[in-house]
Image (cartoon, rainbow, N blue to C red; front, side, top):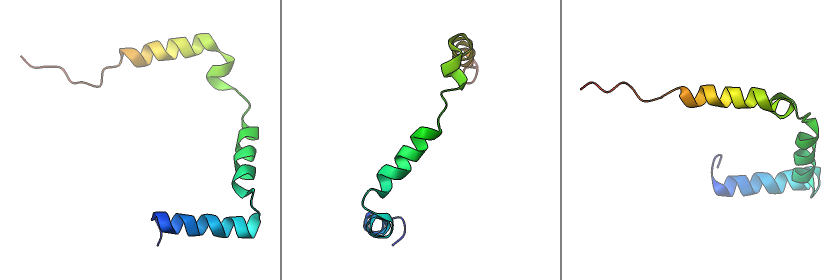
Length: 65
């Protein structure tokens, strides 16, 4: 039943039985603690410049008249 809603519910029940009722809370907390707020968070001017560059790039082709 892989990839179905019923399969997902069975997997969630199995994970909770095997690792505890707070299994998903624990893995979510672990992911949140790994962040160090680097990258654009640390340099707003860099984010502004990168956003401006991205905004100038058109994904539409040139119209041939």
